[in-house]
Image (cartoon, rainbow, N blue to C red; front, side):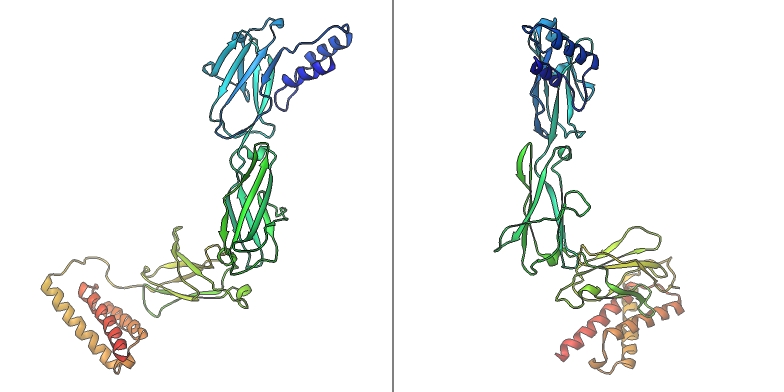
Length: 416
């Protein structure tokens, strides 16, 4: 009879809660005072008890009541986490059995599981079950290295609800083509779902890394990721970032920086990335594919404008504080331009070409004197001459610049 009482109490208790104290005391009194021939029949039972289910799955549960207590299936109803379920999900299987069908289950909302409870017609609790709904497959596994010295990996549980199911995670890794499978041992990095590998990492050789999870739902393995330590380095910011003007060129700035201190003595091909924005804007423009060069010229900028520039090493590297610089002001007229007629364009082109070649003749002696620096000087001179005449650059002047660049390239090719 003691076992019968324990069964009744277990079957009728919602997740993490107790049944009525009065009911328990009454049952205890009956159990202790009744003759030995008296047996106890549970008022109701819910099946299955405390199942573990995958997110998105379905469940049909039954509530079986005892006819000895005058209960009928038609008078019962179900709640899930205190919310009454619609009668359309019920089925009366017999005068004493009522079922409910739940579809597309979401992850459990509380650590003790979701409360599925069968109620009598008066609202009192008859029996209950705890549903543990989650996913067993870890996802979104990512790893990064701090200056090539270590490796930290982080992943996400398979979905909402897995955090409420006791799950054991094991991060494993090995060299792709050879080497023994190893397990990460340091899970105390201060963040959940994170493991830290402090040393003994090979460079220039890819690793295969994955996470294994096991819980009430079974065992599962995340997708295997392959990476080279050098491709996931989160380096310190580049040192000594300087942004300066390019002479009097009003639409350009030069950015220079140094190699991150921790990488100066290491054979590491850094890949730099620059981003910049206007002073009054939050939208960054990114310059990728910088390779391992430590300088860059930003062109096509607004004259007389302050820009903020940041540089980082590798896509995962840390950026330093923004460095500010301004482009020179332009005094050229910015309004009232219109397209020239064809004859006027040709006349302007001939005039600007004559002007350009005359300027070059005075400053360069043959191809040996041609250089990009000379081209920059020509642009500065052109801008100043425009300021003096208060003219707007026309298509002919753009053609002149293109001819100038072509002349420079032709000279260099002729020398070769």
